[in-house]
Image (cartoon, rainbow, N blue to C red; front, side, top):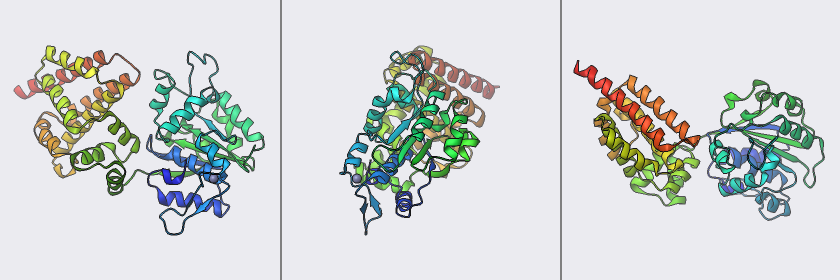
Amino acid sequence: MLFSEIIGHNALKNKLIETVSSGRISHTLLFYGQEGGESLSLAIAYAQYIACTDKQVFFDDELIGDSCGLCPSCKKFQNLAHPDLHFIFPVANTKEVSSKPMSADFINPWRQIVIDKKGYLTENEWYSHIGIENKQGRISVDDANEINQIASTTPYESTQKVVIIWLAEKLYHAAAPKLLKTLEEPPQNTLFFLISYNPDQLLKTILSRTQMIKVGRHPEHKLKAYLTNYFNLEGDRLEYILKLSDGNFNQVFSLLENNQTDTELLTDFRELMLLCFGFQIVKIKDKCNNLSGFGREKLKQFLSYGLRIIRLCVMYETGKPELIRATKLEESFISKFSSFVNQKNAIEFTEIIELAIKHIERNGNSKIILMDMSLQIATIFARDKNKKGN
Ligand SMILES: [Zn+2]
């Protein structure tokens, strides 16, 4: 992965490049940021740059340098198959790997999805890629031993070995202590790049041994420029993706892939809410059957969209309509729907929908999950209507 292939973060890339030219490479780094953002790809690009034997220097660009992409080392990095590049990530038992699962058992699917998604990978996408979506992945004691083993050997081809630990917060509690000494005093030729989407869940003893690198979200004006220039988006579609992606390209890709428009999502959500409000059980059931045909990812997006609309309703109701980042169609719906949403029921709706998302992620029956969710929402609407009536 070249730095130039990763969207944005030029200041950070340049800082990383400078550490190489000045010989101040930190041995244990923690790249942290939004789930599915650029943390993983930046760590890989940095490792590739360190190993590249023909480093490029740019004089008049925003980026001051990059890997060549052509030397034997870069060629191996391209397939994530360099012998001095090691990956550790959370896994769990599968049909094929039924006991003591380790990262090495899943290295081929790992390389494939990281290359396919250019590093924009979420925890759930990884689990569903290897068929463990109903389980909790973790980095085991065996993998911690493996890391120590890698650290104790000499590099094969480069001057440095790089161990990338993706989702370091998934280090099993018994595994983490085994790494403390290695992380604190890594052998001269070993670099550890930890990636975390939830650094607050990392053990403090691990955290204190890393130098933290924040991979921030893309500012809206830059995101807009990327979406316009790289994805040829314009008009309402541009506005919609800009608002829903929250500065995160994993979201952008997912939105583009599922090809939903704000109009479609809004139409479905509005229809479902009106049916819930009217307590029209038979029609709710039909609607849920219909929505369950979306498939898991699209359904999650639909529900996340619903959460966003509810959040915007609360903002609208609390007299801050200027805070609303919505399209015109959404604004029109929110201006009416917000009279039925208040601080209290918004919290309830949010919890109900979040739970539905969680169940869908765990591969539950989407018809049942949607129906259950809708009935709970309908019951709350009915309760609140009664209160108003009294
Ligand atoms: Zn190279």
